[in-house]
Image 1 (cartoon, rainbow, N blue to C red):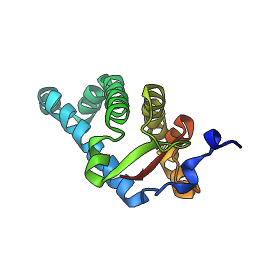
Image 2: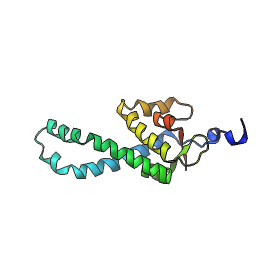
Image 3: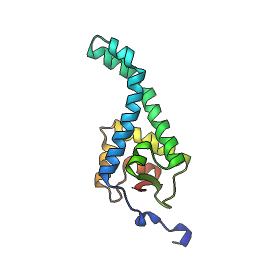
Image 4: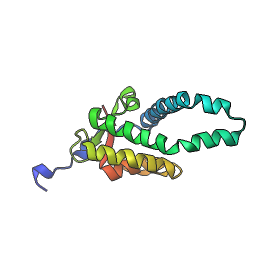
Length: 147
């Protein structure tokens, strides 16, 4: 392996799972608040749990797209979402520890949604992975490190 091919992931100061979980909660709370505000009228007018579920199911795809766009843009532009910034952690390319480019950020954003859709198994994976990589980190070749 030449000097240019040196993988710096062994040098990474990996972010603790607790701070990653807190960042996840902050990000999801922010996105959820936007949708609560947007959907306040139809939800408050609903007469049953089924009607509330129908309102939420009607915007599920928009919610997923919003999460993908949010995470893609923040990771691409700042290397971290607002939750990660608050928790003083960031996303880094696994090989270089540099800020991920657009393609990696988009890949990570898409597979972050997939990770959550399948009973959050993609996130649970990080608990058992030596580099604490969730599925979306694996597919995008990223790590979450201390900022």
